[in-house]
Figure 1 (cartoon, one colour):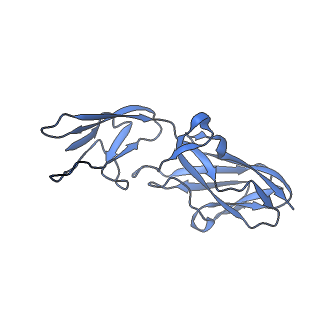
Figure 2 (cartoon, rainbow, N blue to C red):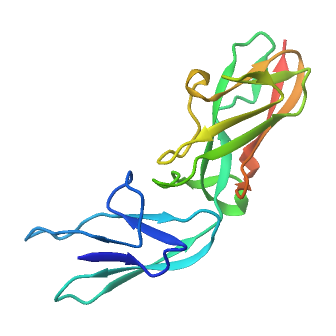
Figure 3 (tube, rainbow, N blue to C red):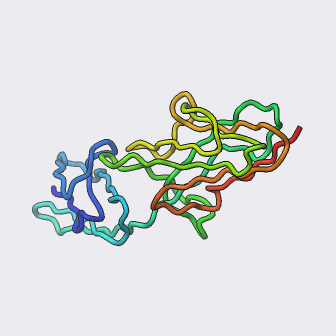
Length: 195
């Protein structure tokens, strides 16, 4: 059978999660098989609607409409309260479909196989209160990457992730952004640092 996208500038199809998508793929079904799986992949920086069409000899074509929306991000795992002497707090940035009112993600979704690495940019608002830590060092800004087939930044600094380092009593806000992505409400986290 043939599975194809009617608009490959918006949507690609793939036999699995780790293969770069194309405009169409061929799948074989053994006798007695009643279902199968395939993957759809949105193309970067575009939104709209595209159809997946499935064709097989002797069968009526099947069609499914796919809606491509602007992706969004959120920060996860960052505690909102720390002490000035606490150990560094490792956290992640996740990407996916924005939820209602863009408060958080309704569903995480991975960068497509064959797609571009996504760079998350982080800032910390109060330098006297805390700093951000990565493999590159510590400071008030940081970046971390989300690789193809992944939906979040690495979970530890040692593997390329992020951490919050509390320094002194006060309140600070950590904010995340990605070019072309919606920053949900949860893409900013206010942290209170106490004694």
